Length: 254
Image (cartoon, rainbow, N blue to C red):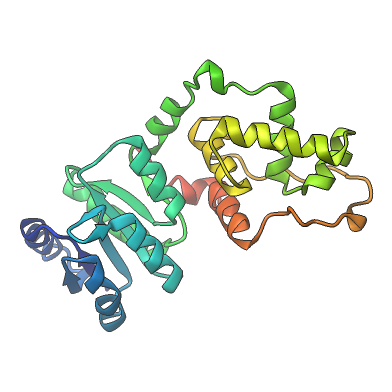
């Protein structure tokens, strides 16, 4: 039995979801609330396996709430339900770490499938519109096309190399390597390694199914002071981009 909690500011939608779930004996609603402020206590008390969260809550951002719930409950399945189907919201949901993204206008079967997916694969992401959204991102404006050097820097960022290690790999000074990275960040509108990789994913510069490549040999890696290396948050974001495996991460994509 899947224990489900509902967080949604629309009374009619909550009523409709209750009616829908009542027709599925493998799912039961164990708690619900209509505001972000009420959600943490409700989830803690109800102990659900899966929670549905509306993007637009009366008192806050549903995706921010989803991030808080993910930080507090690693194994909790989180299904984002939304009336907004633009690509930016979808990619924000992916970056947030939710389990599924479903439009409120989607067929009932798709909503139930997302809940069941979240119950067994909370750490993987599914969305029926993800493939099309990624295809649209491949239409990159000319001003965001990367030069060969910038492409190399992006590859080294994926590998997790520090600035000094990049300098060694590219046969340039550390100062020059910093300049290359700064230019790439500026072009991608990013302020960190994780943001740059996520922006590259959004723009189609990194394939969703692409796993992190194996690190190439780098001279004297043990002697490098990796002060600019990725922190734990960056590593989690990069792992999120790579996904647990193509078959699980793309499950449910239509």
